[in-house]
Length: 115
Image (cartoon, rainbow, N blue to C red; front, side, top):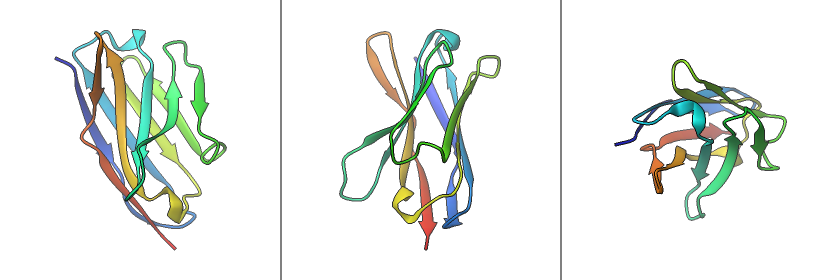
């Protein structure tokens, strides 16, 4: 069984920063690509950032230059550093991994950015 335990998030003013972390267990962490998604109210869930097993990163255009995804293959964690946050970043954020033919999700963390 794969488990993803999220931490971080909260309420911040526009221009502020937050850091999300996700600890993954139940798989050979270093072999997998890891992702952060988010879902705003009344919107579909969208991919925010991805980091491959090789450390290559990809970002959706709206967060590029503001968010940084990173991984620690010793601690089995994936993190999302979010800087210069905007009200439109308000959403529930999820970490995600596809492993063993299944989609595994964290429970989600609320991020609220006030204007």
